[in-house]
Image (cartoon, rainbow, N blue to C red; front, side):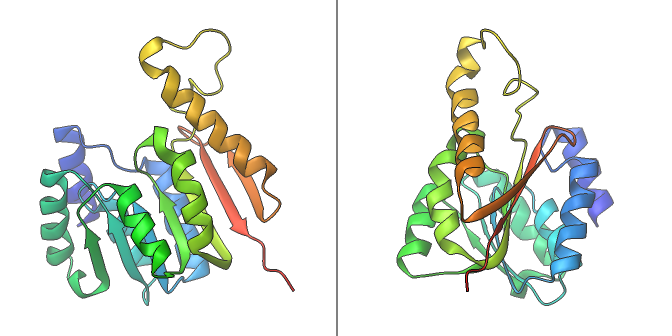
Amino acid sequence: MLEKLKAYALKNGVPIVREESGKLLYKECEKRQPKRILEIGTAIGYSGILMLSAAKEAHLTTIEKDDNMINLARQNFDAAGLTNRVTLYHEDAIVTLEQLSITGEKFDFIFLDGAKGQYIKYLPYLKQMLNKGGLLFADDIYFHGLVKQEGIIPHKNRSLVNNLRKFISALESDKDLETEFLDLEDGISISRFKATK
């Protein structure tokens, strides 16, 4: 199923988690066995299926605003026999995150792979919803290497790059989070919400 989705994504230019990043994502879910997973950026359901196959008891809450993507994801979760383990939100992520935070939802594992320029806006909600000891796994934090690049950033990417830099800085300075930054593929941050006594 995953190989089929990977081939579809490659053929149709659908952005899904990269090969090595996907392996790491699977490994972290397998190791931690989270019960509740939150995903920002469903796309066609590839990473959702990957995480649910690693964490056998997990329920996935996933958010996607693109009409075509959400329909494909729904079909793919159904084909994988995972429909009863998935809650799909079809709207802008910030709207869903606001709603989930108001109702006091909590998650053991959060996979952040939505709009890169919005990561910094999502962060306060994600931290609020992350259980103590939980993990925030953010993908593509270096945005084609531009975030680490010195000098002038092309105008069309400047705002996005600046926002990702703010996101990284916020993770670095947050005393509640223990964050590791990896140069794997397009950059990954893994933040653990430190359990307090």
